Length: 268
Image 1: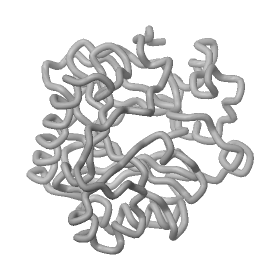
Image 2 (image 1 turned 180 degrees about the horizontal axis):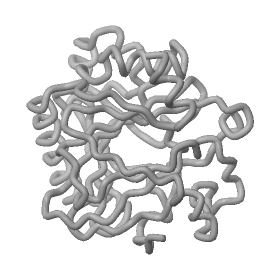
Image 3 (image 1 turned 90 degrees about the vertical axis):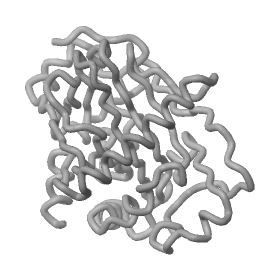
Image 4 (image 1 turned 180 degrees about the vertical axis):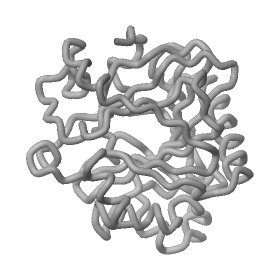
């Protein structure tokens, strides 16, 4: 665990191979695609992250593996070790590119807080799990290691570096080819992008967002659960989940629309 935390602080990303079985990941993919096809049919259910690429949030209890994921010792250890013992689970969703998805511009997912760009303290984590074994034609995720501490206040929306600065990210660029059952953990401030997707096979990716207290990203999301499901959670999950407890689940209207990802970008 210490080596994973050290790697995260150095590169802005780390991972665990084979955390779950391929069968578990196949169930996850089924739940993700069910949520996607339901969300895409209603206004506000999905947001565009570029041509043929969408983001959808999912109710925790509609993902069969939610408890398995948030109680996994590696996930809990990374959250507690980086964010502190009172870490907050604030987001569960999926990103899915289809054939025809283009390169995204290099970006981070939100502006960097002073805690990170000045004090080099990571205050939020994004865990990603692939629903397929990723191949080169599936538009693999591309990341620029070590960029999580970049200031970024002069970038567009403090998230999108000017294209004149892309050379630095391209020189560092590393493509990721995870298999079903693998978990990655990164700072959402590590500069990254999706690449061109030429495969007829969609590449759904689960996203679990976790904050340190005070990071404030729960305001971008609206997790809700029913009382009986909430009461059934083990304490290690329930104590960290930031959510509304409701009588009946309501359709989710997306709040985290990242302006700047709507159009594709030309690669450098």
